[in-house]
Image 1: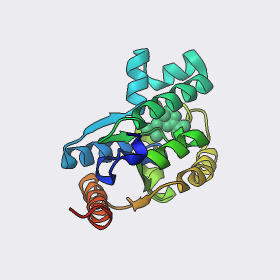
Image 2: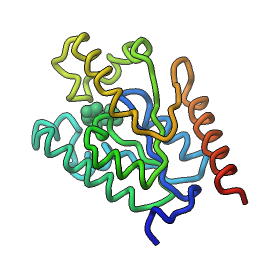
Image 3: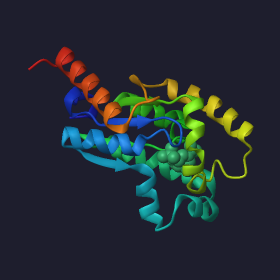
Image 4: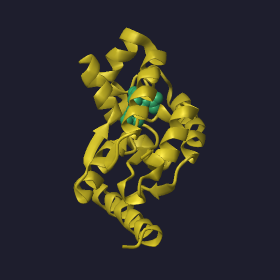
Length: 184
Ligand code: S3P
């Protein structure tokens, strides 16, 4: 049975979106609500190297990190019933976008620039891609990246919502789709 034959209810759920939008926290909350395992791709890569992402970028470089990220996502896409948070740059690889879109249900967590910039001090130290950039450069990156997130099955607005609210909205969207396309 290939994963394309998988029922909608068994498919992995992937969270994509810019750094710091809450993919990990929201993914964990959704996993808890659906009694599923949660996988954070960055954490998997960090565990493999026993290093923080910033050090991995210094040690092996961004390109090698991206390659590992792509391969790891492809491997997890072969499983089922997982909730997967992918790094904000993972969808730069067309192959990754395609595999996630064909094998999984992809949610884009959409946070506005205005709300996002309030979070910058919380995330900058752990995000090598943001380091050494001016706020204008980060803003350009934020807007440039939006096009890669356009490949999704569902967009969830997260402005002014707490983690539980977004997770409830995701679960509601999933259950609605499951009931429509795969009624019991
Ligand atoms: C990156 C996002 C990070 C991490 C790495 C690169 C990016 O993940 O993969 O620092 O290029 O957007 P998060 O989106 O989980 O922060």
